[in-house]
Image (cartoon, rainbow, N blue to C red; front, side, top):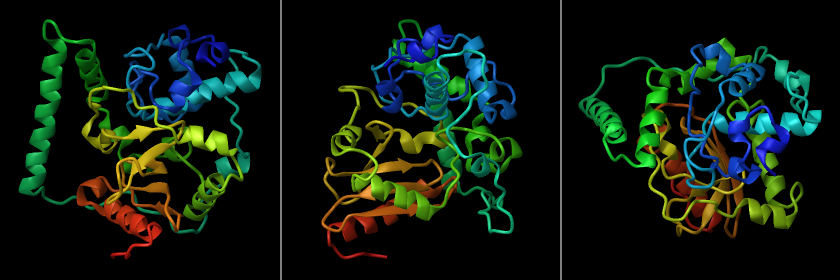
Length: 318
């Protein structure tokens, strides 16, 4: 199925298939669409879909040419498609998502809520060096994209980085405690559940209680494009540079395992993840962190390593 069949008011996106959306190969690599100047709009799903319709959005790369993480875009494209499928392709209607209104509006009451911020400290020499490396990489990609004879991919990399310049604080972990995100809807980014519920959902899927075995097998088949160059992403999303996807599921490399022996689920730039780990003792692991430096510190990797060892009946190391 193509997006144009369900969302005809976006002609620039009409040839993107559902498979390409789910596998992050749609080519719509813009993290923040042009013309979005207010963070509140990002958290307004109906408003974002209207903006996409009016801005004549187009893929930066031909759909199917490259697999690269579509941060906010993944959810917006799916929401537009779902609206058309559920509403009989009636443009102009507000988005109606298949979710319980009580879930969408429930407050946390007196329960503990994770603090997504941390105290500011003086930067270390290593952190300053990392900042300079990021800035140099940013400038280098801009130069390549603007040079005479630049390839299409170099031009795209430059546009992706320029598109988030000045807006990276919009997708840091601390951004999600802002009212416009906490009370808004960012499909594919913001979830309403508990770690236990997410683990239970993935377990049922892996056991064939939600998806048929053929569907599950197809979902876990990699759609990474052969011979593609490495992804170029802003510093805040660089944990996804080497990410690989099936259909709506990230295929997660497991420390200590063969490259072909992957888990599936989803990781986050803040270090959180929900992953099915295969093995003789398979298990589902859900880790909630939401720190800006989790992957750099190796915390998620250490937990995945312990889970992979346990699933393979190896010794679990703390």
